[in-house]
Image (cartoon, rainbow, N blue to C red; front, side, top):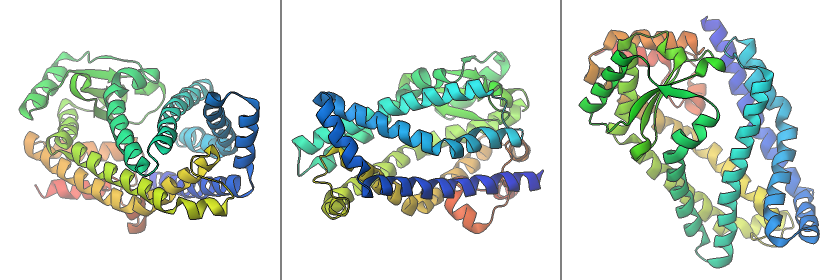
Length: 362
């Protein structure tokens, strides 16, 4: 099983690296060969002004999706079936791809429209305005995700196991979590992996339990899993992540503000306000993302260790935590003990063996 998990993980890491390099090359060539300029000029000359941006975005998005389709299909469909992790039919997979693409397009159009509005109306402070809006918008998305976006992909209903529901609600009360309710989600229609989540903000805050977890884990194991999720909130990890991500967003947009003139000359684009420059902004985000990924992963692993410790401390269920980790490793084909370089770049959670070792010290 561990050999199988290693093979699966190594393929995923390889695809991630290849996919990132491939996307950067496509964006660079799209700019350097003048395709972005040509598409922008053609749209400006043939359609109404307010439709230019939506048309440009959908043209670029569809073009990229087609060029990336073989890699995307192998990673998210073929590979998951090959390792017996997916139960999803090809039709359902394509349907999910369409829905995800439509959602990404709508969100992208909103954010990019505000980006260009800020450029026109705040020429010297646009980077500050757009950063603030993007941060605000991400908080709104977190609030509406459980009631708007997740139901588009999964059906969920109130948790039918009343004993488990009452136990989770008591745990939330003990950890001072204002929880709306507990729901079970039909993960098994798409995957054999197990998961649980504490999502939403304010009145949309809820627990989501995958049926693949509910059916195979004991009440003790589920309690310690959710204690971990609640610990993130209690230890203010979500707030800290918002601050970190906000700072990163400001830094990226400020870097674009200070250096875009040099980059635009390389691609023969007149100004940042020209929609032909949009792929350049994406390159900035990708390059900065690669640079800061190890730091973000390190911070995330630190938060996860704290949440693990808090969960065991609050519940006293050390043995259940250990059994849960072993089940997760097998069910999700997790790499229990990755190479340090792989851990450094890719792991936002401590490896399973490290988490078990920590629990045994309690």
